[in-house]
Structure formats: structure tokens, C-alpha cells
Image (cartoon, rainbow, N blue to C red; front, side, top):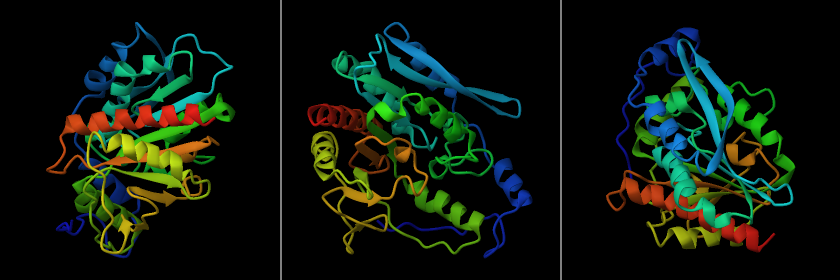
Length: 307
């Protein structure tokens, strides 16, 4: 699908942003929804059956956001750990609500089989602004590395450090949207002083495997489960999805750790990043949330069966 791209309004073409441009960008960001009402309240509703951990706190001016993770009761150090993350990019709504849906509807199915650690909304400021970056114009999903410049990424890394060596599975829940092409990619190019190269937006669900440690059978198991809920993105005319070669139906690969991506924060044998397309005329928001939850369930079932 080819999108119409409007030139970005901030900065001088070819010149990376400085403090003034970042301030101008920040001034345009408007709070559009409530993390407290839509996410924290949903997490509070799970406290009767799950432990909730505040693993950090974001303080941006006069705004304060608790960072919350959900764990199963009766944590057993003899069991493998499954890490589920969402909302690294706050605008990717089904990443957040798909993770919450998994906990509410499916997590109990894995009692006694795995320890579950779910961080459903890593970037609450961006969730409220429906944006990709944090207030410092930093993409948290390129910042999962030592000395991270993103508070959101650093906080999750501190949480995961406690169990990193025992994580069997990490599934990171994302979306690809029309605004990737009309807002976020143009903003990225402008911020970095680079030309914007338009691309298409894949219509459907796809996965990103780790090119350094691929697990094709695992990825295929997730794709097969999600195909029962929503459609899988086809390759474009060049055999690619978002510029990367399709290695199997609905699957591309990135070097996760090298790029500082969330799915690379552990040495888990099984790692994947999900991508749904909520702007498709063939999918609803409910389908997108259900697809994310189905992906988590399928990933867990496969990982536990192939330990």
C-alpha cells in the first residue's frame, strides 16, 4: 500500500535537530488519552489474581508515571521465565491491550508451567500522546543497550536483569500503522537530517525474528495461530516487508540486540516481535488485541514444548 507523504514541518532538510527543533516538536505533542484510566486501572483489576510490581517511575516535568509489571503468584525458580512486553512504542495500542488481554484471559492456563513477567506499557508518556518517541525525541525501541538514553528502556532492563539468564521466551508486542509512513518515519528522517524514503505499510500481521539466532519453526507456529484470528501480511513485489526480505510467510529478520531492540534484552532461546496492522479494512481493534494474545499463547506453548 502506497501512502501520501507530507513533508515534515520541523527542522532544516539535511540538518539534524538540535535543542530548538526538539523543543518545537515537544510543544506539538498533545495528551490524547489516559494511562491511569486505561492501563493502570486495568492492571489494578488483575491484582486479585496476580502480583503487580512497580519496577520504575518516569518523571517528566509535572507528570509522573508508575511503570508496572504483572507476575504470576507462586513464582517458582525451578520454572522457565516467559517475558511479555508491550507499549514500547506508546501509540501501538494493541501491544498494550493485547498484553493485558493475555493476562486476563489466558495467563492462568500456564500456572505451574512457567513464570510469567508481563510489562504491558513500557512507554506511558507516549501512550498518552499516541506517539513513538519519549519526550526527549528518543525511540525507546532503539535504546535497549548499556547506558540507555531512554528512561523507559533502562527501567525495563533493570527489571529483566533479575531473571535474564532464566528467560526462555520473550515476545514483544507491536503494531505497524499508517502513521508510521505519514508521521513517524518522516519525523525520524527530519530529526536525523536524512532524506525520507517512502515505503509501503504491510496489510496484515507479521513477525520479526532474530537474524543472529533464528528460530523458524517457532515463528511459524506463532504465524499459524494468529492466522486463525487475523490475516498475515503478504510480501511486496520485491519479496519484502518494510524493506526486509521475507524469510517465511509473514516473517522477516533483524539483528535484535545490535539494533537495541526490546526483543534483544535477554538471551532467550525464543524471541519475536509481533506487528499487527490496525488500520486495515480487514481488521478491527478487537481482532488486533486478540491476535496479540493469540501470539503470546502460541509462543508460550511452543517454547514450553521445545525447551
